[in-house]
Image (cartoon, rainbow, N blue to C red):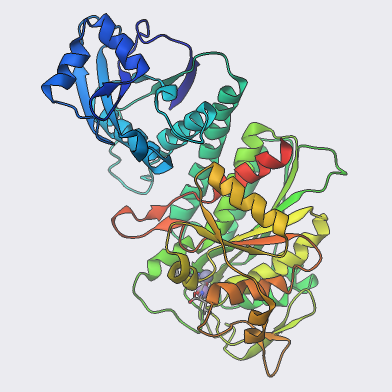
Length: 494
Ligand code: BES
Ligand code: MN
Ligand code: ZN
């Protein structure tokens, strides 16, 4: 979809559709009142008849409004003033998306300033609108033989702002970049594991770098990992016929001496659990176990689209977790790149086993901070549900920055405590640590495990088990937390 920043007046905007908000009870927005005047009271008479209350998310499409400059007027309800919050705003935009998709309008005029939303400025409303609209366009039908095609629907949305506002302009281009990144992340997530293998992710990373001189890719194979003594990562790929890859994507937008932000994404392209085999129900969803990796690729895409003046490095340990004659067995002890030994009591706790070596490897980039992103624990869904991602880490300021970035882009994050007391659960009788910490506080003990490999830098861990994809009828990758990560990076520049 195309987005234009315009300064059209409601009387003069010529398009297929004017979007006019109505609040309860039956009150036209400022732009609406001007269109109403041009139509000699037609809109007011429709409201008076009771065809539109203005309830939150209600819509009414009026064709050929007399005196209006556009072919249609779409009335959209914003509810009572007290209803309007971020969720309410999202509902309004989604209602507009559905109503326009059902109409024949190819372009439309929108006046985001008309919708009052406490604590959010015009730039935020514009950014959120662009994100929701672009995301609504996303389809994953490349593997269907009968592609529906999308001849209908909106092609262009004009966002009308009172004056030339640099922040609004930037909001549009940032939202377009974020949504391009989300789309790549969603594609990688949605692709089945027989297509999206570790080698496939490496190929996509190379493809991304081809389009940008500031991006460099390096892919390590299993022999390289062996030389680097990544015994933990290799223990996960041991049972797989697909070779593991350790992919790094370096974006250099600032001087070489400036330390990069490092993003480390879990890339388990399929998680069977290994010898600690998972039950069969919904196991197909374990193709999404590389969504951390996908969010790293997506964020690099967004950063590259915007050509940001900052250094960022993405690191992706990619592997399958399979049962096999050569697979790691419960009780096996491996030595990680850090030199610490790990007793693998459950081969299904594989994410931390690949991340720990990738986190040790990350130090070589001398990062200013490291953020890992992983579909790491089912326990995260038990603790927090599917609304926020969990964040834990060893640096207060970094965690606060992530919490704030999440609020800015409505890609929510909630902190869990990483207290020392929990470390005891990782005790092993035979090695430096076990790879599981028992039933209690599974998300926290997973982070405790990672914390033993991140002592030398500022680090935060995002558990995206509940947020990276949706199950059920809407099954599919969400593209989260690309908005959060991209916003975090943007905040480090401004
Ligand atoms: N990829 C899973 C975590 C997961 C499960 C995410 C379901 C989303 C939905 C991870 O590798 C895993 O299997 N974790 C285990 C850890 C346990 C063995 C300590 C889990 O959560 O059960
Ligand atoms: Mn697992
Ligand atoms: Zn997993």
